[in-house]
Length: 104
Image 1 (cartoon, rainbow, N blue to C red):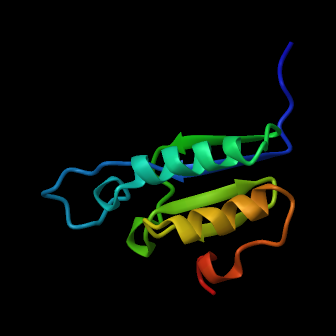
Image 2 (image 1 turned 135 degrees about the vertical axis):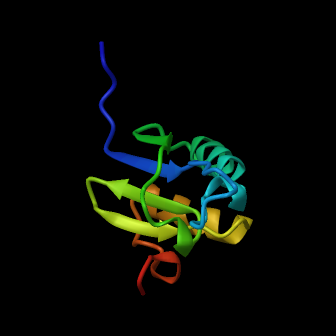
Image 3 (image 1 turned 60 degrees about the vertical axis):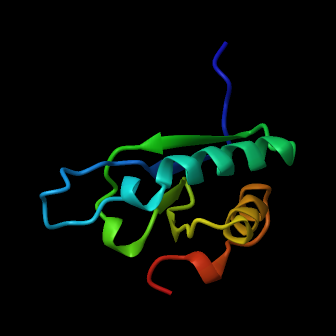
């Protein structure tokens, strides 16, 4: 039986060739950020949200990129626990963490 998820959080963990001119999320510690987000959601008892690593989301220059589906909300996640806690609040059913939304 396949588990149904209310939301999916995809965090870019893409690593570019260091000789390429564009930035990448992996260089901004994105794998650790994704792991901490996943653990924080689990610790908060959120079992209907899937947190996954993703390939390039093509917004690496804006920071560690994350998109929440089906909401279509894009986040830049700084490597700090405050940001992760705020995004977990959103994943739990609260308001989006506007201070970490891309382009806002």
